[in-house]
Image (cartoon, rainbow, N blue to C red):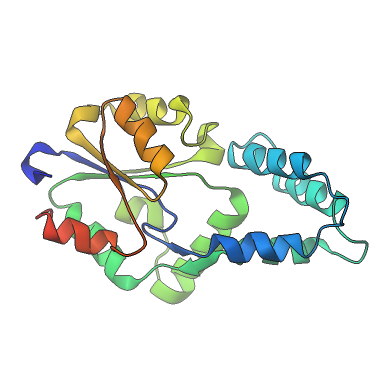
Length: 208
């Protein structure tokens, strides 16, 4: 990858900037559901919540409707947020350095509960009050855009809103299908794998 041919860096959030343990969250939720829980309904509300089509209240109440009798809303919230581990300081430092030479964007499948947790984490651990403005030219969250990766509409929204050229843009994501969708629209793509930190990759490739 030649940094001289790239103007825009587009980062996924989960397992790229913030460390996640998705299995922990889904396993925690599984323990709350009834044996006869409607899994199709649960899967559907996950997608609708990430696309901003249902509120946090509807999301929680839908999961509660499929849960054991003694399960409370806070149990759902804690299980859902348990996948969020935190953001290492060095990745925040990386973003600031990259902004000196590139346009830097965030493109994330997200939801209100997770963003609320992340903002609290950034304030309490890193003393960051305005994460999106301080570290990115623009942040695109699925629940605010109305699409989620790998839907074409999610990427097209970024192209149109940021007025960027995909061929001059590197998109980085930990999910193969999201990178593939970006490449089909002309983006350069890099799949972030667990064994190689994004900060290491970009340093080795000469981006900073």
